[in-house]
Every structure is written in C-alpha cells, then in structure tokens.
Amino acid sequence: MPDRYDIFIVGGGINGCGIARDAAGRGYSVCLCEMNDLASGTSSLSTKLVHGGLRYLEYFEFHLVREALIEREKLWSIAPHVIWPLRFVLPHHRGLRPAWLLRLGLFIYDHMGGRKLLPATRTLDLTRDLVGQPLKPGCRRGFEYSDCWVDDARLVVLNARDASARGADIRTRTRVVSVRAEGQAWRIDLEDTGTGKREQVRARLVVNAAGPWVDAVLKDVFARNRPANVRLVQGSHIVVKRLYDHDRCYIFQNADKRIIFAIPYEADYTLIGTTDRDYAADPGAAAISDEEIDYLIASANEYFRAPLARDDIVWSYSGVRPLFDDGATAAQQATRDYVVKTEADAAAPPLINIFGGKITTYRRLAETVMRRVEDHFGRRTPAWTASAPLPGGDFAATGAAELRARLRAGHPYLPDDLAARLVRHYGTESLELLGDAASLQDLGRHFGHGLYAREVAWLMAREWAADAEDVAWRRTKLGLKLSAEEMTELAAWMQARRPQGAAAAAK
Ligand code: FAD
Image (tube, protein in one colour):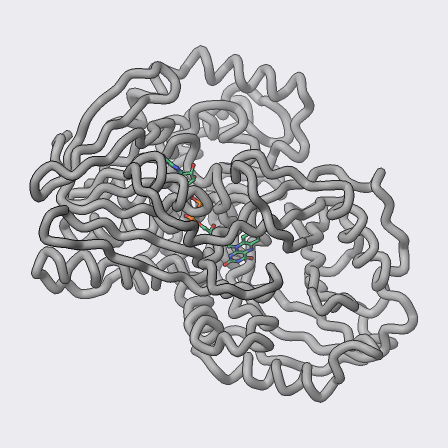
C-alpha cells in the first residue's frame, strides 16, 4: 500500500464511497478512512428513497428535483438488486393542498426528468381501489406516482467494494485525527479505533465527506476556526408490523405542511417517517424523542383506519441530515441540495468540503467533485459511473424475478424468502456466495432467520463487516428479527474468526 495518495477521503458514507469509486475508476490512487463501520452515519438512517422529492418543488428547488429525477433510472439500472421502483399513493386531504395543485406538481414531476421505464402518475378513486381499503373513509380521492426504493447501507458498501476492486484503499474503524499541510501535500494522522495504533499517510488532495461531522472535522482535524456551514436536522422513523397487504407506499400530508411516508419494509414491516427538527449535539448520538414518536403516530392515525399505538413500534432510528446552511428559517425549508467548496491557495494543497446532499444524487455529487479534482491535477477523464454496474448489479433492471428463478434452479433447497433476500442483497453475486453448496447444512451454522455462516464469512471477507451490528443492521436488516441470544452467538462466532476475516478483507 502506498503511503502517498492522489486523493484522501474522510468519511465512508454514500458520498465518500461514491467519490472513492469514481476516482479509483479514473486511475487515481485513493485512500478512504471511516472511523466506524461503512454507512454507520447518516447513510444507513435515511428514508431509503431514490426520489426527486415531490415536496421540494414547493420550495422551487427545480435544479435539485430535476437532477434527482434523472438519477432514479440511472441508479436503478446499475444496482437493480438494491434499488427498485415503488408506487406512491398520495391521498387528497380536504383542507390541505388543493387537488389541482397536487395534479400540477405530479405533472411537473412526471415530465421534468428522464422517466423512461417508471410508470406515470394516475388518479385513484380510493373508495374502490384496493389501496383505499386501509385508509379512513374520508380519503376518497388520490394520486399514484413513481419513485424508487434503495437499501441505503448496501448501496454504500457496493460503492466501497467497487472502489476497492479498482485499487482504492478502504479502511474502516480508522479515525482521521489530524490533517496538516506539508509543502504541497497533506500529512494525515490516522488512528485504528480498535487498537489505538497510529499511522501517517500523505496525499495531494483531501476530500472532507464527513456528512454531519463536516464542520467538526474542519474544526478538530484541520484545526480551523470558522462558523458552522451545515445545519444539522434530525429525522426519525418508526418501524411497525406490516400495516397492509399491498406493495405500495403512502405519502401523507400533515396540517403543518410536512409530509410523512408509510413504506412496505423488509417484507414483514411498515416504515413510517420522517420528522424534521433542528439538532445540536453529536450526530452519532441522535435518538428518537417521545415528541417525535407521538408526531409520527398521530400522522399515521390521521389516515389509517386501524389505530397505531406506541406498543406497535418494533424498532426506531434517527439520522442527522447535514444540510447546507442557507439561512432558511424552518428545518424542512433548508435546501436539500449539495454544495461542494474547494479551498485552495498557493500556500496549501487543495481541500474539497462537501455540505449536504442526498443518497439519490451521490453519483452526480461525485462527478462534480471529480471535475474539481481534475482541475487541480490538470487532467480530463471521461465520466463513467452512470452505466457501470455495481457489484452484483449486472442484470436487467426488471430481471430480479428471473435471477431468483436461476438461483432456485441451482439451489432448490433454498426457501423462497431466503432466495429473495439473497438476490436483493447480492444480486448476481448470490450465485458466487452460495458456491457449491447443495443443502442448507452446507451453508454452515445457522444463526437464525436464514442467516448462515457462509453469508457472514462473505460479509467479513468482502464487505468489511467486523461485528454483529454491522451484519444485523447495515449489511442486512436481520437485526429486526434476531433475538438477543442469536446476536450474542453471532458476535462470538465473528469474534473467533476476526483475524481471518480481517486478513481476507484486507487482500
Ligand atoms: P454520512 O453517511 O454521515 O457519512 C459521513 C461519515 O464520515 C460517517 O460514517 C462518519 O462516521 C465519518 N466520519 C466523520 N468524522 C470522521 C473522522 N474524523 N474520521 C473518519 N471518519 C469520519 N436522501 C435520499 O436521497 N433519500 C432519502 O429518502 C433520504 N432520507 C433521509 C432521511 C433522513 C432522516 C436523513 C437524516 C437523511 C435522508 N437523506 C435521504 C439524506 C441522505 O441520507 C444524506 O444526505 C447522506 O446519507 C449523507 O451522506 P454522507 O456520506 O455525506 O454522510
């Protein structure tokens, strides 16, 4: 491994990993350090939509909405295992936005960017349509439109995998402690968060992709004293047992002008969120408040026939959006667009800071960063990430069912739900993961709910999974089902294999 790189990236969220992939594919030497697990920050805690963001039209964010809409089908085509289309049902609520305004917004949404495969908007009679059944009788009319779903944490890992396959050095559980200019290069001090071991590397350019920690990195790592550039906005979700039997989502308008989603989640659940409130503490410590729980339950109860209560919540999570501080007064009005700022003067090597952004636009953000990088290095290489599949994503966007059938044909012992999950997680690589296994016993120890040793070993060797939390909450969402005892067994098994897994992952 070199100790001097072209590009050093702070942060292994979607933006850092997307930039690492793009840069490595253009032939730059890249090192990315993440202080915890990949996607352990905001990038595993989103609403998991690849979407234009219908409501951003109200804030005239046309550039953002158009760019995001165009990205939907591009991302779906390069990662059809972790991204797929969803239909959203928007009930008209008398007394809130008028029907003509919703229709106009959806017309713009349908026509402003790149929709080729996703179906168009249609009007619904909720008194007759199946999707009206779970709703209160007052919901008579509605609209149905398209966006996409994404397994956010897996998208991050797939970008890191591809970056690594193209030569990037990806290090997890490695904190960037200090960055100082040394002539025309940066000297970077790293700390292994497990062992405390320190190391120094050098790079010609640094990208600060620390998400909600971007200001903290500027202050503590670069020792710069400057006012905050990001506004931290907390968003929380609750997960409840599946509330209805069809595969569509709901987008509900609230009286305070916010919207919340109710989304089919991990086959057996419904995900409800999100809230939007200013946040001022450590982003890693965000947790849902009682007030947010009440808000989400009240919003759902405004629309669903069957009332929800606190006891119905099986899991909740909270993430912190790093929004660029554009001076908006309300959290939900602050821009969701990203801002890329380069600091370069003759006395120091360049530093590129990233503020804000969405999962949906990470690939475009990486291209913007690469233009800045290439300005500095005096090179121009073609953009390439829009059509190159991510690992396991080399099959047709609409081909998941066919791939599942192929997997079942080669591995007839697989239960339906496991075959479906493996295809959704690993795409075409699920064939490689299963290898020559001819029975469930061949997959090794069973930790519960279809998680076998062979998959865990794959995650340790290929995907930087280091502990049970990484496997249960980011590489999969089996944490929703695994009991405390099953988690303990998984943790012990991983602990016993760690040196082997770490060595394999480092290859
Ligand atoms: P992060 O994912 O937070 O990554 C930054 C990383 O930097 C962290 O992992 C952190 O550990 C690491 N780091 C920090 N300091 C250091 C250091 N000193 N050394 C090493 N590593 C360090 N977007 C969408 O497109 N669709 C959605 O549906 C959506 N819903 C959202 C819902 C919520 C509630 C929230 C909060 C956001 C949502 N977003 C959505 C936005 C999206 O999730 C974020 O914009 C995106 O994940 C930010 O990614 P990032 O890589 O910039 O930051």
